[in-house]
Length: 340
Image (cartoon, rainbow, N blue to C red; front, side, top):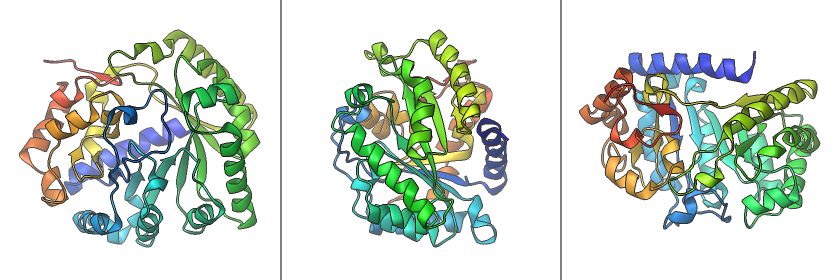
């Protein structure tokens, strides 16, 4: 089964579970607003940054989530946590402690990293604790393109780190974590999409996730040409199949907002504890402003299940189902409203 088809099936399951259980089984946590890079397209360059969610803050929130979902004790793997935000998770001193604690409860964990801070020690911890998927943010298949986008990172350095991670997995005879390149297509790198398959094979990565970049107002120059993107996706699909590299391509065109399931089956918790409908909010500009203006509550003050079942959050989800774009979603690059 292709990754895209598996994701669609999983999404339907998670939407159904959220309605039945009155609480989502998919939660995203932002572990850090710190980053060691200054990437060309990233909203991080426009925020104050500096905050991390420490273990003391995280633990009671996580306990509330487990308590809110009755399946967590029967089938904990159904609980999916993506520990990714606007910053680099490995810059949070408690990041590995948080992951280790979560894994001790049997849940499923994914996260994204720029890979610059991977070491033999933290790689071994991720492998031995069976973290499920690590997404590697790599936006270029050549040194010139990669370093132009990922300012502050060195292409040869991250290739070396990922190769060492892959080798360590083999030495420890482990299948996890699955390593996936996360490639954000832009006007800077779109022509290197087919080369990403060669890079994945070279550094021992199992798959590639490709998304056409969302751009904030005033940054439309970063957007990849849609027609060319579609042409290259077809080339990448053929090449990935030949090299046995798994491929996941995000939405290639905007859809009616009724097709947005992320708003119905998950929630995003910022490192300050604010609840938002999804992670895409931090990618379209004005992240700090939107977080303060449109959050559904703060988990440090209100129980997370009460936030999900609040009238404000219920109204939001009902608007999505009716095809109305709530204010927080009106700049979304994935979905468009069909009603006002």
